[in-house]
Image (tube, rainbow, N blue to C red; front, top):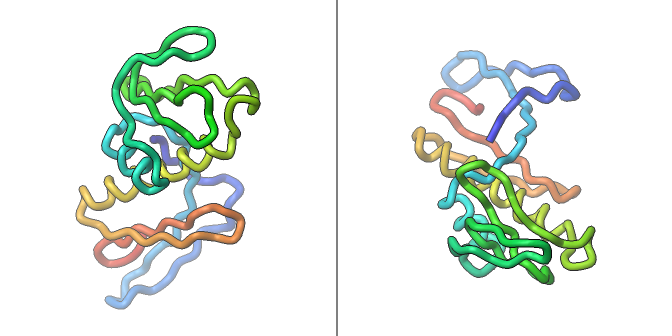
Length: 146
């Protein structure tokens, strides 16, 4: 998962924290690659999907091997190739599965991966669903928010 500053974001804001230090608000854009099987499992659980299973599956025009993710209304599973971060799928431009279901999975994966990485570093994380369907994730680092 790559994290880079959002060049379209408003200027960074500086706040004072409770200890009197300065905290900078960071807005980032996350470009997601699916590389973490634990985060895939967490995303499937979050969405109420069947647990992803490592296997070879038949797609319309071939086969793919990796974590097979069954999305609602999709004729073929999405296959996460964690070693490369790529997804293999065939939804025939939406005729065999709605893109919004893949988008929901990718959003859930990104949030769960952030959660796992924050916890691994001893940080806490909060989520706030927004009206546009996005999720605001705040990572609380000792002495302020990241």
